[in-house]
Length: 386
Figure 1 (cartoon, rainbow, N blue to C red):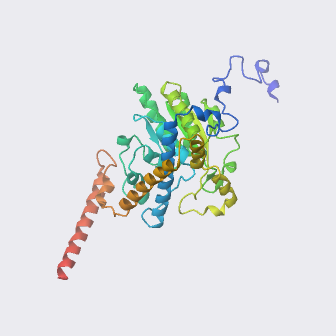
Figure 2: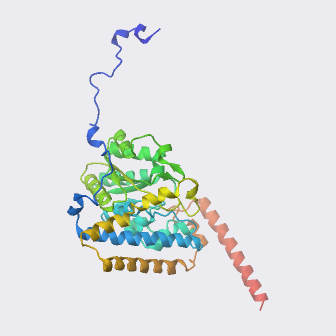
Figure 3: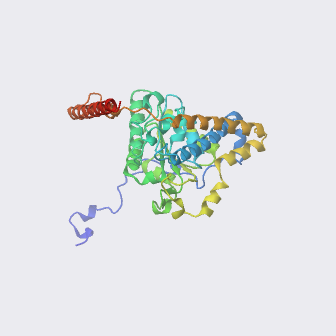
């Protein structure tokens, strides 16, 4: 028996009833067919020269920061470091578009964004050296903990932004995630909630081509990651992630839109991870050297440097000054990271709950007893050796 033969078949409609209509016109939400660019175009002339020079100084500093942190892993001072070399334009722009009252929600690769927002470089690396907890006070800096699980920071950003809106605050949350994180359920849940609630949140996807060794083509068949925004009812923007001026402009517009009640925006920044996934990864197993070299010609520092020198805004002295400042930062970071931290094992039980549970109190007491017993044994052995 077919559908048309069922009782009441005359009322059956193979299409939605006339009252159905799209909730949102999809056309204004669609991203541009090509990544938006500023540097090397007429639009570059409209950018404040002081902003461009500041972006340049931060890019040079960020490149040196990545190199120094990578070196620290080889010296045993860091357990692991996910370098953002090649992605500095995304990191710097994300930090600089936010006001002090806003919140940044970084992933594990976004230490540079946290440093550019004002976080102490050593505190930004504390988690990656195996020290306690986050390494910094999130409330003080309005930077959420560096998030190692993929995309779990995104729903947190939506929750904070929604709560701020309900409280009447004009706080904006900017959440950073890699292309691999867009394959996680948290990504989809966060975007859906953000759009339904019209939460003041900006999602920045740094599409660096690989989720560790998995290329983007094996993750999605979408025209771009920015196109995913349309399915949730928010604008999608596609931008050249190595063009720091373009990323700053697009993110800045999204932040203003969110602050003024316009709701969330999904920004996809097309960039490239020049280094391996982490110091524990061998990138030569899944990508060719020729591919990496091709992206070196689109280096974010070179793109901005070419723009600034071509317009007479930057000379040899300015470039040397930026490099010297970066070297001073790296030297201070080296010196401080070479000092062994003084750790208290009892900190394991601090800042877990406002009031410790019975189980935690029992575990803390057991550890304290073991530490005291070990100290007594060390004292006895020292006295015997005299």
